[in-house]
Image (cartoon, rainbow, N blue to C red; front, top):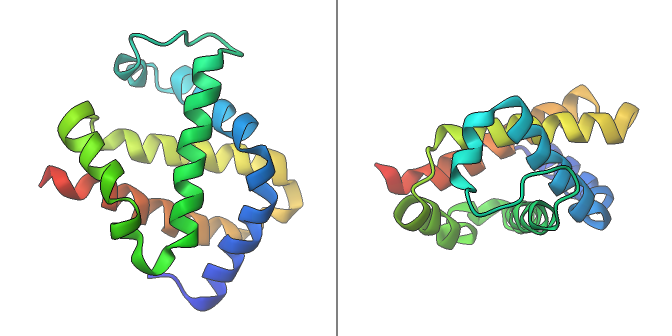
Length: 141
């Protein structure tokens, strides 16, 4: 899956992302809701307007979970097991949405990290987010 170099890239970028989980998480969700409006159906009880505190809080939860995944790259399935159960059995989120969220997060990272978001980092992040999507989807099978 991820090489040692890719893991190091992910750890180093997360040091830059971690202080901004509220902002980056909210921006990622807002971008997803705007670009892929069908994803709004899972949040009927949320205020989905720009700057919504509910979106901001949920975005922080999403990025905190991704940060936990980066801390546990060698045991991603176990680290995200509770989230996998929650999304499969309780929330019943369409697994395709995990890839949509990943795409939007990549755009947010590229916009904020600019030249630091190298092709190598992009590839490593893509591998990581694909693995996260696979783990979150594995209970659906």
